[in-house]
Image (cartoon, rainbow, N blue to C red; front, side, top):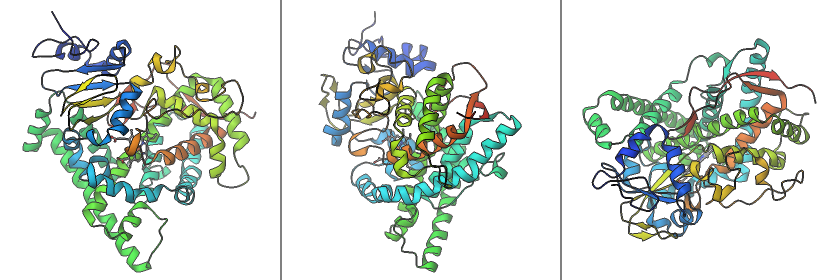
Length: 481
Ligand code: HEM
């Protein structure tokens, strides 16, 4: 006889909790949780299993608003989260709470003003798209080569986030580097994958013991983190020297320059820029990979999008489109949101309760509980998005779906918490949209992307979600309209 901790959680037994059901669903956790949440009247379940802390998983916007905003101070990331990423991120913004977080948040916000997006990020995008991405796609189109678009987009995003955070160009997308990978990017890939596996381990004791003895994956992680620290420390030193030599007072520069000019010490700066690289390196590429795949399945929407791009873009200058033009691309924004609704780059995210609390739907939270909000499941909730919630329908993002070029809906961040919400909402949200619109627009303007396989790709939710095996595509010049 089983019982449930809430009426709608997984089947559970005394002492072992839901470990049997968990084990049976271990390869489909995302869909398992989604099914359970859809059956719960308030889209919230309590999961308890032997060896893991009590976890409340919610897809309920009111609960999420409570956790992320109303009672923000009671729901920090907490030690169980920060110890998983602590070796890699140290005290960087992504991995701290309280005053340490607040100071970094305030400091970093200056890098994300409209002025800085226009003058710094757009220049980096123009360069990366114009001199690397488009020539590469042109070559692939000419030679009918199959390329892994996910890998291309990852390299693109890594170059851009390094230019923004460190003021250096790792040139991962440079044609001469296309069969190699920059040692910095490689170290980041290894470190983020192993750190994510720590988080996904059913029992944390295993990785903790491996860490004590520095063996197997933990040895690899230690080496990768050592490499990252060494590279970044060297970059900081060189940048300091360059600033001294040129007496650079440029306030609208990369994040690293701003931090050095603000007089911060070396380990603070190192941890902070590492967090930014982690935050920006695979998120936009994941969103764009899934969008290109979804568009290939919906050619009529792809065509409408190409028409919007053609109407809005600027063909007379090297820059494909200006900042104001990007804002005009509403269908593109709707498609990006719709793609991320179904395939969110951060599939789930957790906080840990400091004190006992009650969520708005009545779920009791105990001090120490993990509280997980779940964008992947939320995108698949009929209660939130209607009967067609599994379909790719960008027009749901418009106030009047049938009116061409109409206004976009103002969707509540707690119904669509893909960028989180509240005081810790993603700092790079505007930059991410800028980057994704610029890239997707530039590509669709000139090319058609044709995936070579016809099956449903697999969504893998590590720290950032990705497509298992990449997205293999052929590129064709877009036929004239
Ligand atoms: C589609 C792209 C992106 C998505 C979906 C996304 C999503 C998120 C989410 C869910 C969080 C909260 C994570 C947590 O607290 O555990 C976050 C935080 C953050 N993101 Fe993004 N992100 C994206 C792109 C970027 C980019 C390009 C940058 C800039 C380099 C960036 C910078 C940050 C930073 C600094 C934080 C930490 C904010 C804080 O703790 O106060 N993100 N993002």
